[in-house]
Image 1: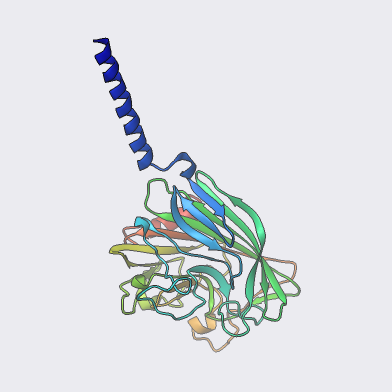
Image 2: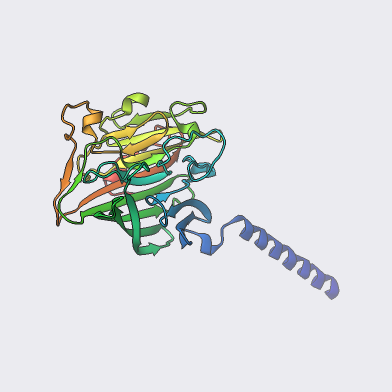
Amino acid sequence: MKRRSSRCLALFALAAASTALRTEAQAPAASEQGVQINQLTNRLRVEINGQLFTEYFFKDVPRPYCYPLIGPGDVAMTRNWPMKDTPNEEHDHPHHRSLWFAHGAVNGHDFWSEAKGFGKIVHDGFIEVKSGEDVGVIRERNNWVTAQGELVCTDERTLRIYNPGTAPERVFDFEITLRPAEGDLTFGDTKEGTMAVRLAETMRLKGKVGHGHIVNSAGVRDGDTWGKRADWCDYYGPVDGKVVGIAIFDDPRNPHHPTTWHVRDYGLFAANPFGLHDFEKLSNKNAGDSVVPVGKSVTFRYRFYLHEGDEQQAKVAERYKAYVAGNR
């Protein structure tokens, strides 16, 4: 009888251990919970609860950028090219590298394109790289250097990536402060800028595989959103059979708020407060110029909200109100 009881206890213990192992396999390890940021040779890898969210490329690149952006349902929401060559992607605008900040006229120099004589935004060091249960932080310094080697300005940028818990969404904030190097700093009036993302091909408004839509906070839709002012703009469409979207929130503290939007039917999606000559068809080609005096600085703040469904399902307007109120 004792031998049978011992055998039963042993079987029970084995079953309990097996159940524990299955439970551990189903849930991320404690070390994988939260936002984990690890530095590799040329980039930072950002994971949320053990799943890849993005990688921040900072070394030997024309300008720092995030690629890919993995959204709800584990779908890639930005195009792969020119970082990676995949089927059914247009090879236009090689400078559209997933998600980036740049501008086409900074003291007369082009930091937007990768055409002949373009300027580069060069990594100068990390101030802070911190993982966390609720938020991960990347703080970085960069130098804006012309093709001739002239330092035009510096920037200090902060990315805050939030842990959404069990919610399928992804949310992060991008803040950047720019300072003149010598003399005044002028952001020129051009549509080529500024806080930008290039969406997955199937999300774009037009194209051979594009089935997306655009809407802004004023209710303007699709192609009519280009160049219009709005508190936020949302671009959504299907990826791998799932409708997802990216909303960009323009912080009310930003200069020229509400920003104008350089949002295109081929998947370019950018907040650009400087391009008034193009957007509003003004005769003054310098109408949108913005000058930062030497010794001063300018700061821009944006939130990216990666969501399921269209702007109604994702309650984008409500989420913007919460953002403005300081509630995440």
